[in-house]
Length: 227
Image: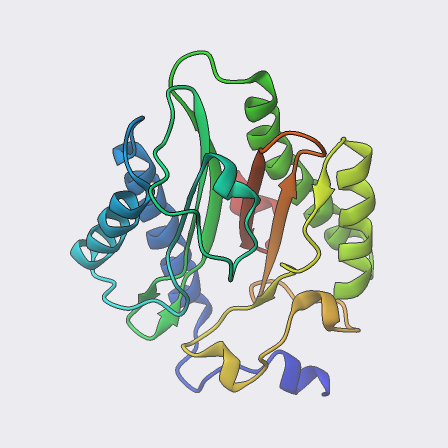
């Protein structure tokens, strides 16, 4: 595929709509995270997340809602969680939501640590997965790396920080729904330097020995978007 095909968007696509969808998605994720408490069942949290998104105006998603508690944070995207998992007192969880706002896709993922006296490695995981995202994003800004090269760099960076990168979850485009009408592949598979405002960088890590994992994703954007 050529660049125009890889980075294609719908006729109604606009940067303003995409940034609005990003803002709405991140605000919704923060609201969902605040409502999650120790003792909650993962299934109940997922239902709450769905109801929250609908109440905020997103009645469909371009991908399923993921809520992962505890050891389920090690699961790859398509894997089902172990049923009946409750969030512990001093535990880790992550969210991954892909709501559609109007006709524009949003996507956000983040890791949280909750409760009293969590394992220090949980806090390190939540901090490092965000840190890895921004190290890779900074490399994208200053280099001409392709999507594949960015994930090779992400793997090396993750290993240097003492984690293992999930190389089955490697980014994708984001646009007017559905982006898959233009390109139904991953960021890691493209041999171009990804353009700003069109690609989601996904980072999922796991501890090399403990049942602890983390996830963070956002659009590849310039620094001013994070100030």
